[in-house]
Length: 287
Length: 113
Image (cartoon, rainbow over all chains, first blue to last red; front, side):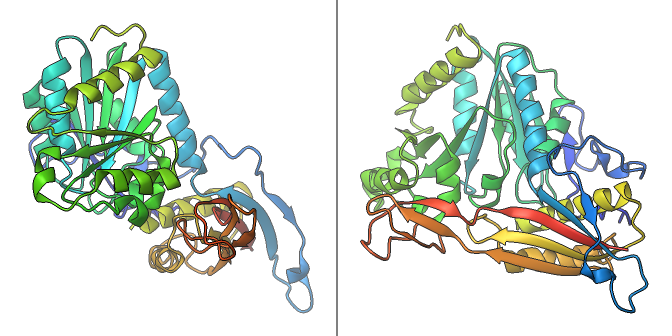
């Protein structure tokens, strides 16, 4: 582990292009193997250190102890990288959506069906986030969209730096959509802005209608909630209205679409929503 | 466990700030963790202690300063200590409330030598 900044194994991630990747390659597309002069841009421009002599310098303490006031938001660097990612997307007129959910909600299936339905009208790119394997990226490529897989290793979420690294590995065309499928986890990804335009939280009807209350941070920070696997509604105790009511107390502007990626029911509403978002960013979108 | 990557970020911030002023060592670090910040303070402290061992914070005392969550009831305007986002107003039992404090997650200061 680097002695200066503590970077090293924890937090390491790998970025794979599934076309060029076998399972054991290790692509270090990040700055962990950097030189250690630690010069970098400082985002927290309102928080320059103000060192001043405090009472620690008294009595027999002849050492040069000083208190340095910092007041630096720990997420500031991530938020600024996210801002740069967002600027990149806006420059290229790329609509970027961050898909979050617990594992198994059907994010990848929704993406597969979306790609198959829309790929002739629109270029779609995907960044896949999982702890391990290239399985999801391969599913996406099979459906017909270029994908880059980020393996977070021990990590439980994607951050803006990982997305920036993945962007360097893909040639995203202008006037396209980029889906970022986050690691399946309703807790950790809530804190990390990736630079997306909209955050889409997916839940499935097998998960229970009280999900928004149990994971309030995620539902508070999302723009759209997809309720997936609607074909199973007759067999499970899931009250869609109750879910919407819970979520709206936390986030009154959260939009909802109920669909089944498997049967296709409600997918037209999702495509319509995508088209609407695309018109804002890509304009005009021919879907 | 996003606390692990947040701990790494705190170490990076501390290292970078200490470098800027050519500090020999960091003796203490004060970090504010708001109760509604989404960071589990105990897990974060454990992660930071673990990861600090081989870092610029290896000699540093880690002080976690908790800031209480505060909410203002949207129905009756009562301000109260709010321990979780879905807390109901203790006065009128209404929900939701507007968060007025406790979102902070900041490196406040370093004591350097």
